[in-house]
Length: 255
Image (cartoon, rainbow, N blue to C red; front, side):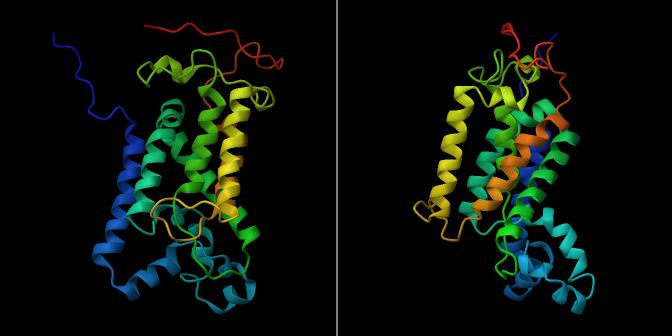
C-alpha cells in the first residue's frame, strides 16, 4: 500500500479558490475590458462612498444605484488595481487565510471573509462619506483573517512553529478575547499592526510598487471585525478554563 501523496500546495482549497478568483477577475479587467468597460465595471462592483447619498440613489436605476449599494460591500474585495496590489494581497491571504480556513472550514471561512470585507467597507464609508474615489482590494478581509489567526495561533500547542503540518494545532481551544489581550505576544502583534496602519494613514510609508492611496480605515474595520466576530464562527469549543477567564492548560504537541 502506497503512502498518501502530499499535496504540492499545503493550502486549503477554499483559500486557493479565493486566490484564483481575484487573479481571474484581475485578468478580465486587464485583458478583456476596454477603458470604458473598466469604468463601467468599477461603477457596478467597486465600493464608492458617494453612492450612498440618498439623493444620488433616488436618481439612478436599481442596477446602478440601490443594487450595487448592497453587493459592493463585498465585490470590491475581488478587484485589484495592478499586479503589485494583487500579488501582495494574494501572499497575505495565503499566509493568514490558511490557518483560519483550516480551523473554520470552507463555508465558515467564506462567510467570515464576507463579514470582514463588509465591515471594512462600512468603516471606509463612515470616514469617506460622499467621496467619489472607488475602493478596491481584499485587504480588509485579509486583515480580518490576521485578527482571527491571532485568536488561536499563540495558544499552547497552536500552529506557530509547526509549519502547518499538524492539523491538531488548528483545533486548540481559543481563550476569550479579554484573556487574549493580556498576552504580550498578542499585544506586540497589535502594536505592530496598528502602527503600520498609522504610518499608512500619515502617508509616511508606502507599499513597494503601490502608488494609490491605501484605505487604512478599511483595514482597521476588517481587523476589528475579525477580532470580535471570530468567536461566532469558531467551531472549536472553548476549554473548561476559558469561561473562567483563565488560559487553558498547555496542549501536548503530537508528532
